Image 1: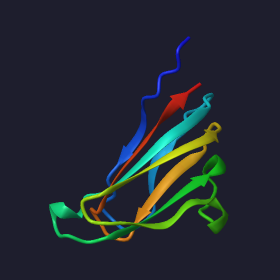
Image 2 (image 1 turned 90 degrees about the vertical axis):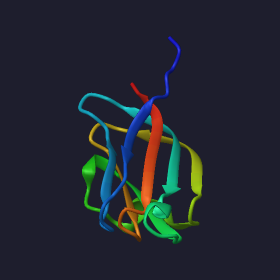
Image 3 (image 1 turned 30 degrees about the vertical axis):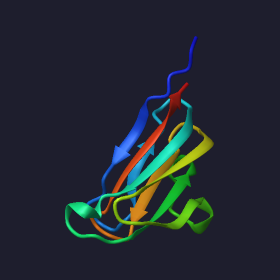
Length: 113
C-alpha cells in the first residue's frame, strides 16, 4: 500500500501560550514528515515572531527536554519548512508557542499507522 502524507494538524494560536497542533489518536502511531511554520503577522502588523515547538510524550507536562524547535525567528511574511522524521506514539502531543498572538499558522504533515 502506498503511504499517504495528509495534514495531521493545523493551528493558528490566538494567544502566546502553548497550543496543541497534533495529538496522536488512541491505538495509532504517526510519523511526522514536514512541519511548516508561517508568520502571518502581515494580517495585523509586520513583525518577526519567535516559535517554539515541543513533542510531549504521552501528553507530559511541557519541559525543556521536549523542545525540538527552540524559539526560531520567522521574519514577517515568510515561512520555515522543516523536514523532519519524528515517530509519535499513541497520545503523544505536538505543541507550538508563538511570541505574538495571531502571528503563526502551523501545519504538520505526516501519516498515521
